[in-house]
Length: 575
Image (cartoon, rainbow, N blue to C red; front, side, top):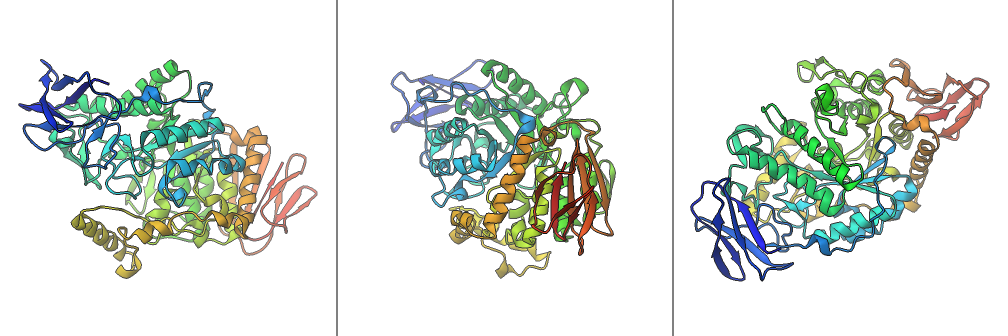
């Protein structure tokens, strides 16, 4: 608590700014680190660093930014928090059910503490882990979180460091694991001062969102250490169980040891030290199984990866959407291909890309991949943020839920999906800089003009009403059709717990029969059949096993001797 240190290579003078005074720091003989011991410092001490006489900037490893991204940092005594989860030993990954939520819109107040009040709902639903969208300090009081700039500091508007700890502790007390979304491919544009300290960024690569992180160029050793140490910090100091790594395809690393593989090695060692499993979950659009393949087999050894192919195929088949990258999808047989092989495009020709895409997943465990009908990206990156509930009938929404929650993947739901929430999930920001706010607004409208949207119809990200429209309306839980959709999700998740076959991780335990012409699909998994009918007329499906009806999304499902009749836009589970 008394030593202050900062990496600032190649500079002539670095000073600690605290209590209105500037104190010179001493440079290590090698490595570019500057240090100063301040015996009087303690928890909550405000401080910053001045480089070569410049203004005081927050610590690149600031644990807390009480006044936002432009204010001074504050010290945190992590040992002072009284945890009640000493007996927590984590949960079993293959049987995990994830629930993605955004602290700022999960409740109207938008804080860690008010989110705690809704955790019992998730337990009753059957969720086993919550995944928080990024909580790192970003400019303003509202936003998605993907423009964070103080990567070590939980957002002050959500409740800061202690607020996050209270949330994790409360989740663990209910048997819920916590996954935290982190962004290591870029930093936000406002309050980003890292380049004033050292070579954190490179102009050799670029990302769609800003300068690329320097993980393989000159001076990159400490940048890699910054990223990996940050990952380990969330596990050790905040007791989280997993990290979701945003857009890893935008982390360009041409060194022999990819930074993600190095991270996986260190996290595995930390898991052994802490005595509980720790997860690393990648988001990537490359359909690259090497992310989750073991390091012994030449992969990175991450726990799991998102599977956008399954989402795209299922969304397009249910909704008829063929815009943008959905032009590659739309056949119900592609849903079956994803269920059997993970990827629709596993080194197959993609018309949208006009090239071959992906690589086969082979015999990898299917629980190395996440399956979902909705997530923050696939909703929020639509012009008006319309959810599946706004695009599909209640019947088709239930068919989608049945295929996701019985798939061989680890399933994930997005907040409110379980009751078909009427609220959209729109893109919102809170940049104090008017010029930056204008650029974001115009960029958003220009992006969707290519899809035929009039500028006035695209919500203004800077308007507080855009965030407000995205806040869940919990009162919907007790009204139809939301109540019926919720009960269907609860039924499916209860079956997933009761039937081990629905939480297996074998690569060859899923077989699919499908007709694109008649619009039906039947999935068989270890004695369980999921029969889905998207056609216009009722259809009879053969039933194996004991011929028992486990669940039906419609009252008009009829079970006969060796068959089950499923009406249009409905699904039935039999065994």
